[in-house]
Image: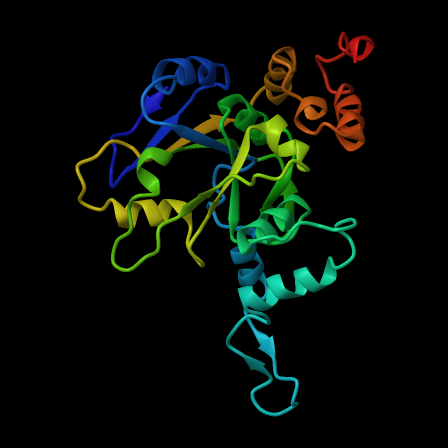
Length: 272
């Protein structure tokens, strides 16, 4: 394990194996400030919301009048127009007599069902984050390359400090934990979200807000080699962390049974 010094509230920890993650978590993050965790298949991906990524994919709006210029230098929709379209699209799809929702509730509902939103998903469990880091065998490494990443990433955020800091007019991130009883996955995953300022990656945000501040790490990046992915998932399955427990529905059960074809799970299929 190799650990960097804290710089502008950010620390990087480089592990030699996923096995070191268990000791790291219990020794460094078991006590102290409240932490939340996020796992990503590719360590090199920036922590951007899905709505920001959608904007970067479609940065221009076509001029429908047919005049010059052909495109305007702005995305096709604003965030407000995007959310408004979602509200209209789900009319009559929330069941009879649906309760009123706030704007944050609509974003959270959309996030759960695949809508691009300004939210980033996190969990209160470091091992759930580790599962999501290793779950997908392959991911997009570039626009035209689908392969296994060199390193997986787990990220740790101190919520004791991140919500209280804003600098140079940048709005603070906000922690969201919807009160709805309908989202069983939130409960099973210990999930919550943070709402990011638009067009902002989390590492850049922390670095700006904590620049020059003599403070411990608010944001910790853990780089984990992709080696022995199967062994990591087998160990997490022994801890009862798998698709069936994190996604308590038929889709989750089906994905869990499919995953048992991977090496190391052969003794598990009889005990589903």
